[in-house]
Amino acid sequence: MGGLTTLSGFEYVAPTDLTAAATALRDAGGRACVLAGGTDILVQLREGMRSADLVIDVKKIPELLQLEYAPDSGLCLGAATPCYQIYTTADVVNAYPALVDATRIIGGWQIQSRASVGGNLCNSSPAADSIPPLLVHQAVCHLAGPEGRRSIPVSDFCTAPGKNSLQPGELLATLTLPPQPANAGSAYQRFIPRNEMDIAVASAASWIELDDSRNAIKSARIALGAVAPTPVLAEEASQFLVGKAPTEENFSEAGVLARQVASPIDDMRGTVEFRVHLAGVLTQRTLALAHQRVQDS
Amino acid sequence: MTKKTHVTTTINGEETEFLCEPRQSLLEVLREVLDLTGSKEGCNNGNCGACTVLLDGLPVDSCLVLAVETEGAEITTIEGIAQQGHLHPLQQCFLEGAALQCGICTPGFIVGAKALLDRNPDPTEEEIRFNLAGNLCRCTGYDKIVRSIQEAADRLQSAT
Ligand SMILES: Cc1cc2nc3c(=O)[nH]c(=O)nc-3n(C[C@H](O)[C@H](O)[C@H](O)COP(=O)(O)OP(=O)(O)OC[C@H]3O[C@@H](n4cnc5c(N)ncnc54)[C@H](O)[C@@H]3O)c2cc1C
Ligand code: FES
Ligand code: FES
Image (tube, rainbow over all chains, first blue to last red; front, top):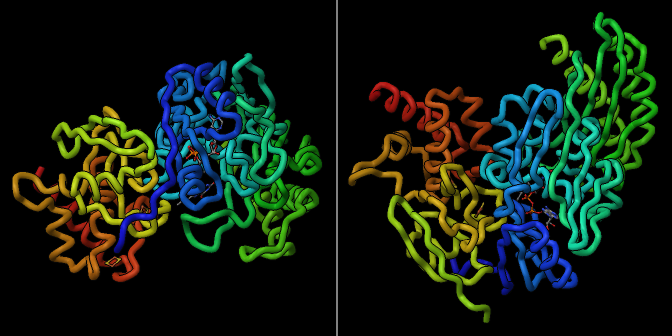
């Protein structure tokens, strides 16, 4: 073996202050990139898909490593908090099971020790596993730029494959997920040709809230991944379930409706027809699993 | 050429200082600067796990870590798994169970398995396979690796 395939040269900074990081990012005028867990960006830099003169490591900024949960205020998740830390935190496992399902299947353990949900979102792949769960849990993105802060719903974050609404110099600081009502549950599943370590051909996240009798659905949200230029909410399918009984039949009907928002591409991973079919099946299955989780709680 | 950065870490229990360029991965520095060639390069993109080391106790692919990021960190490589000249039970069981052929994947499997057994001393076959899904082996077909890890788990448990 010769030498390792190396990265081309860049400077490295690891600011401890968010505004300093944003200012450095803006001042580099497009020649800088943010490093969280590095599991996307280091691969992209090495393979020449991206290039940079400056790498800004955000893992020394305390706010970006937060993992704060309280039943009445919900979850505040630092953008750089690694997946491993998320799925080993019992409160998060109980309150946001769909998000936890995703963090357990992003790569293998070595990837999960480093990969963050913030990085997964900012990479903005249509197949990113954490985004459908963030959509059904109505996450809010808190952004910080050199001039100040703003917050946007996660449904407004991704704009096209690999593109998002971060402005020059802007960073994702935290994600907040609202507290969970009683009788709510969620789930995320994807289809991949192997058992683990692959990119989703299609995926779905479902969230349901039952009424106190647990015989009727009070509200529901369904989101699909890898079947459109960005992960998408299936509004009509979600609305259909309101007031209905949580039965296999209704979940199956919701699956059929969810397929309408799928506008996938044909590629080596799957055909259009197959992906649309998967969107329906995964919707049905994640609804059933979310329901099961409410029953078990 | 970019200026070199001075980094201080603890590697296999010993305080270690090195100079590196920001673009150098931890794997490159281990192998080419520190002469710790036990960690292997299989893919250099996070898929194979041959370069697995423990970074502050957690398994990571050292090809996807910049060496400059490890300032102040604790790193364990395959060279730090044997203790006082004695092979770790995982190493002994891999040898006895013929869990390797070419051996490129072995350091990564042993380091990954050590992390697993540290947290879960009695994993099921499924737990072993799921937790080591980030380690690829193109020679053995995995069964002997899984059995050797189970055997090592048994020995470690009966020793305590
Ligand atoms: C072997 C392997 C398997 C993988 N498997 C999966 C998988 O199953 N599912 C999946 O969805 N992904 C997978 N990935 C992709 C990757 O691991 C995930 O997308 C991961 O969540 C990225 O997080 P990170 O912290 O490593 O991001 P980084 O690589 O550090 O960053 C990702 C992108 O976001 C930007 N960024 C990061 N943080 C911020 C911030 N706070 N503000 C602004 N911009 C930011 C970076 O500049 C970069 O463009 C895999 C990758 C590898 C190498
Ligand atoms: S060499 Fe690092 S994962 Fe393959
Ligand atoms: S023994 Fe050759 S890759 Fe595993």
